[in-house]
Amino acid sequence: MCQDNQTQVSEIYLLGFQGLENFKPLFFALLLLIYIAIATGNILIILLVSTNSNLKIPMFVFLQHLALADVLLATCVIPLMAEVILKTKREMSVDGCILQLYSFLNFGFVQCFILAIMSYDRYVAISNPLNYILIMDHRICFLLGLGSWAITWTLSTIEIILVAQFEFCGLRDIDYFFCDVGPIVKLSTSDTSVLQWFDLTCSILFFFGALTFIIGTYIYIFIIILKISSSAGRKKAFSTCSAHLISVAAYYGSIITIYVTPDDEKSPSVNKYSSLLYTVVNPLVNPIIYSLRNHEIRQALHKIVQERLRRKVI
Image 1 (cartoon, rainbow, N blue to C red):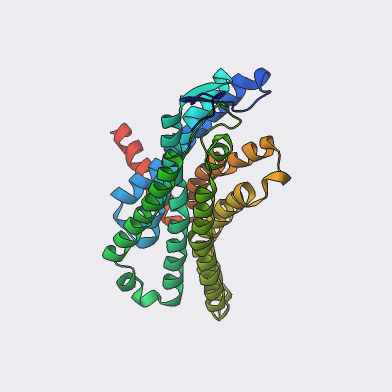
Image 2 (image 1 turned 60 degrees about the vertical axis):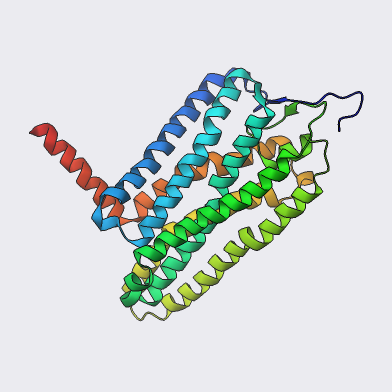
């Protein structure tokens, strides 16, 4: 319960990025262009994999899941961020804030499972190429993808149920550009220890568990690649993993920078700008990485462009 001199807060204010008064139009325009690029790139990957028979293989099916998570993550954060920039301070209901947090957890956390599955897919492709299609058949791919979303949904639902029990009294301002776990915990006047223990347990069991699995998988992959006799064969095998490795480094690098570094070693401004790596840069970079590093996607895109040009000529 709130104390006698405090009132229950039903609305909060997102302060966003302070001190950008002279750069608001530029920052807003840049953010809009980035969001358009994120939506275009990731939706294009989803459509290419869905419509092109040559891309209906496990690696691209899982890439489709990653692209879906990226575009949904960007959609639940960037439009609100743009509004915060224009208004300087954005009013939001507590329920709306919790709903955004729920979406953010779902679309952000699922990526660690998808990336772990993609590493296993690369391991099977390199270690057992003759039986790759048999091992990673459509049913297994469907169950792995569905399982990733189901686990994430379950964990996020438990976390949101815990957050929904919090009370917010007196203070209204969140010095952030979206409703993340850390700022909400700091604003709440309730005992948040249960949520923090739950977050710690999930981080160890699932987040770092997935990272450990990826590292272990790639140790085996590198051992197998080093045993390949020809340099051309080693280069070809490594090229099939390079895009995924870059995605893993970008995802876990940004997450560790934001959530693992102790808060007392970071200023709020540093934390906010670091969060842009995860919420804006990663969803933008992933489709670029896979478009540049995968010949099949480039070929499928080139084919579509040629067909469109042919239709215009006709």
